[in-house]
Image (cartoon, rainbow, N blue to C red):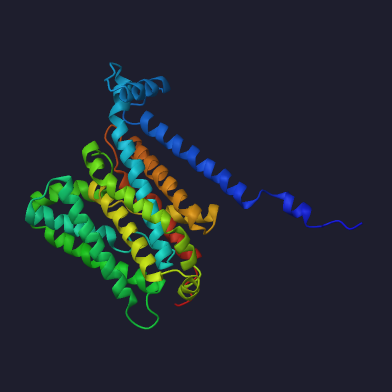
Length: 350
């Protein structure tokens, strides 16, 4: 009687779906822990009962008389903004890496953050803008125009848009626009005072009104991103294969790119240019869940939310009784990650 020899090997380890489900559960637990830490830690640490009391009072629409619970209520808006901004940035980075097929693509490296910053600076310096709506409109326009410009420049020449050409075009554009930002700000002290707090990137200025303004844009862009997941999987096989599978490559790229730019620009308008979240999170998610965008995109949203929330909490602890902005913490963590990625990535075209 013959016995199949592959049965023990198949039963030896968990199936990919089971492994992914376990990692996904772990991602939710990490996110829940980051929320709890964000509410409990800061210039004044609070106990678990005080956290519960603060949340109960907030959901009940009343103000608690306990000092610890009041501190929790004051941290709720910034925690929510950190979750939303981190999720949007993680999702935006995953989209840009998938569309460009570039492992080091993210909103910062491709110039989207700097383009949004330049338009916001010009609005502050020349138009005197102060409202969140004005910041949002200018950030969207600036981020979108720079994204299109980088893609056009990276597509010039033989071979079209390659990962290396897009990265170089984004780096050059970022450097040029950063110089323009400095040129606009240096002669204008008043504009510099307004801009310097926004430029660092952080969630300390969280406000329910501004979050309500960007919420519809984020919801629409995130929905478009998730709907693009099958197209992005086909695109990873190459344009010719994707066309053979019936995918409209041009339309798919436009929709996914627009979703990525909107996610990044909307967050940049209210929280400033926060770097490296869109670069780090997709790489970690890809190592754990593989390249399937149907899993990768939701996990990047969860990972980005957890990363920015933890970074904000660390910034509050490091700078107590003040704080270090979350954008500084993510840059401090992200720079070594970028070096590691660059060392491990084989650039065959060089």
